[in-house]
Length: 248
Length: 261
Image (tube, rainbow over all chains, first blue to last red; front, side, top):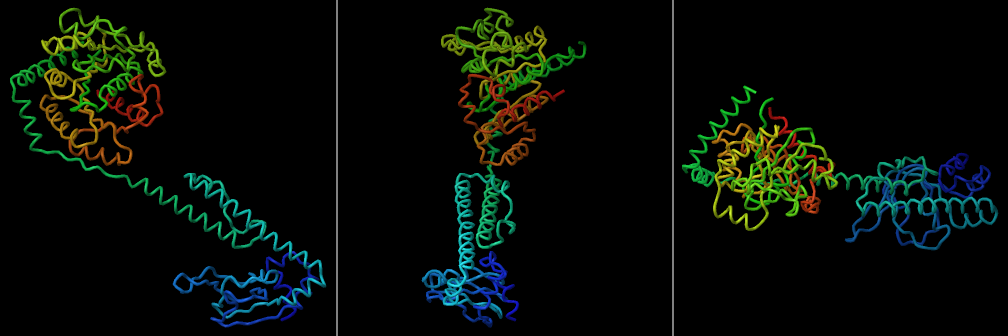
């Protein structure tokens, strides 16, 4: 099983820049942990001192809702890393992670990580690159999200048509930023669709006629001598014009 | 050559945009190369002359002079194609055959004719003379709102009656009476035009309601527009802004008139 660990590590975005040699060195520092469905991998608020890479199985990332209930923020699976920040900073875990299936993870303890940093500056550099590219990737998309939000606020949805889909063919196939953007686009499409639908739902006027009044007014106008005379004249005039047309 | 058609434009109440409609439909038909006359029989409150750039200084003989026997009707004719192609929209009428027969805008002459009245038969003779002498294809009559005697006469002798109404119940009620009168007087062609429709309403639904109620075709539902208000009767809007929604719908009305055989 140990022989395959370098390959498993390679699947993680964070370790992608590492050479085979470095991965082998890293593999010697990790331990394998198996979990059953419902097992807690890490708990929010605890001081973390391990990075986990999911090899098999699925986890839910949960936070506490306003009324103390469980709020699932995300689900995550094979190839994803969890808790990598704990290797660098001392901050407590930001969320609780619970296995939702039987799972297997590779664990890299902070002490082991420190050791490898001391022994292998090339690994340290590769990891820093991994961290920073992840950060850059996120900020780029955050900037885009800001630009797009401003456009949406101005009622301009044109960018949806002009921006390519996020399908993982970006610089890296990470991940949450892409997911966020894709969710963002989904949201904009829904908003636009709803707006279009509202525009379609035009109000309808109700037009009514008072038939009794209509009849009364008609009778008032047509009941005069002038009208009777006019009707007669109009008839003659039409006949006259008709015949002169036929002649001409 | 068959005689020209008399087209009366009427609305039961004022403010529907009747004169504006008359001027625009008549201009669109003149633009097609037809010979067109417009008589302003709204003697009490003339207005259509403004759309053709005519003011007191340019106005010569008027319909009032003719009705008082002061001149033949031919002297009242104002040749728009020759004399009024002086704005962006009207410039398109240069060389076209369009004549306006304006009513007097002098207060004294208006009050005189209202006080003394006139012979509606003479008005009718005037129409017939214009049709013949100018060999008109269409004679448009811009009527006074309501159903007074000269308006009833105009309706009675019309080949086509266009009723302009706003989509509200008061206009709906008045239009119902006018439609009944038009049918009673055997007007051969009745065309309805809904003007000043607020864009939030479903125009197709308005058209259907009006057609269902009056059993007459609605040639267009035209939007209420700030752009037209802004034009402030200075120009023929459908010529000045041909791509505007109002202008497009207006041309539909002109087409409906032109389609009558």
